[in-house]
Image (cartoon, rainbow, N blue to C red; front, side, top):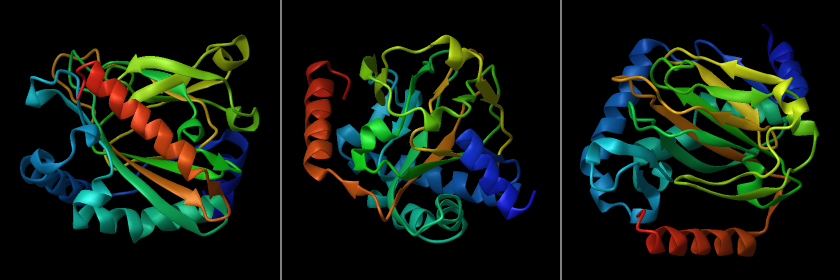
Length: 251
């Protein structure tokens, strides 16, 4: 597909998949750096940036927030190079790099990701942003591939409410509607594949039902430079979320 065809698909569906964005050598390089960070950097990261399915088990690590703020390799990965260029091409404008996250669903314990719109968390006006999701290993329906509601980015922001799911604290209150179910598209991916979706696109993922496979991925968040962030609302949400997680003993 040409660049204009990718862009057209993104505009029509609210998401697009690039099957071989990185080669296996590049993926292995990212994994090596990630393993270094988990070993050497994570012990010094604040608790609200490190989530475990089971806080007493180091092997149940499920999410790392703001890797770009804690390690220069991942700062460069977010701020420079092809992922940022892709985000700018799809949004049609320069962007502000905002966050680089690590996601995993440990075998047998990785929980479902509730249906949500990333823009609900971002507090932007207009809500112009993109999330780029990079698979570090094979992801399919058994270990929890991403599922998009095609075209949902054109339907406005849906009402969200607390989910109790660590790392995905807000989910769509009225999901699923019949129109949602009619347009769900599962997106299995091989290592090195990249998914990009609009901040308004509804998406979810099942849990990891496999007995031995993980589901490691990176998430890159970019805001369109024309979008204004309500920093007070964003900080209030972050403060309330941290207090809630501490109160519930999740961090």
